[in-house]
Image 1: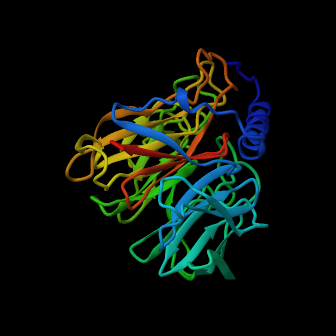
Image 2: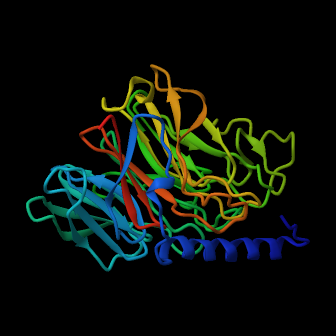
Image 3: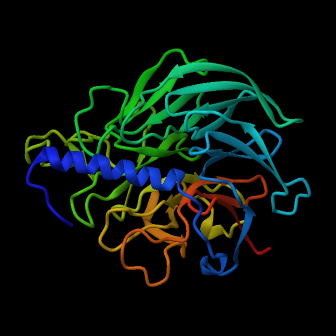
Length: 382
């Protein structure tokens, strides 16, 4: 990787390249995918649940069991209906359109919540007709520049929404950037729950610890192998993960912190560290029974894949085993691979980019791919 002589040119280039890459994954035409190239452990089967889901990002099941998917670049939320219950969608229904980069989806007390780039809206949900009506804006979110996705999860009667940084590394002017915010379900009571999270995209509740866990994308331009990508347990009270002053396991970032000054001593400790530039997005805790025992009580993470690494990495799904208390055991292991083109040694060529992970009531995994416009279904023994 090249090095820059001035911080201004470095920052300007980083922001420009990040914006171009974001535009590429969110809005470009679909990539040709090859299902035969995907590899999973013995006994697992990968099928296409739905195609032509342009820019498929985050997913949620409705109270009636229909899969909803956000199409951020299209400004849409669609329902994928498997009316014959055969593990393949046979109808696509547009639920919402004309939105501002919708990303995170959630249901709470029968209402549909959608996190757009600049706001959260709540809708009345009509399961019979797959319709979302009566939009109510609950909260304004920070917008403009840098990371644009907003993810959402409910836990303990509270709504949690993430907003990534506006830059690669900087001291934010808006304190809501690089955070997970907490709200009441009606949008009131806003506060910063956790900060110093450069870009927390995946939010999920660990059923064992009963806390919100997040995937975080680390900074760029420290070489191919720094800093590690991370997963944090935000605990009962949130906290500070340290960005931009620290990265990885409380390592001082010398662009902002002098070694030995103690600035990073008390920030949150990551629960999992993974290969740099993998771009971890969606995560899910498997609590079903279809997968073998070895794969139950695991975290599964979708790696969107690198854009600035000399040798590309990511473009796969990994898993991390948990103990009986919900704590990680060992390191991330490959679960599904093959989206990176065979023999590819340079950045910029892939057959798919995994994003969101959810699990159905049948115990199957559903995985979105925004480059291929595909939602996959992963089952065991069927």
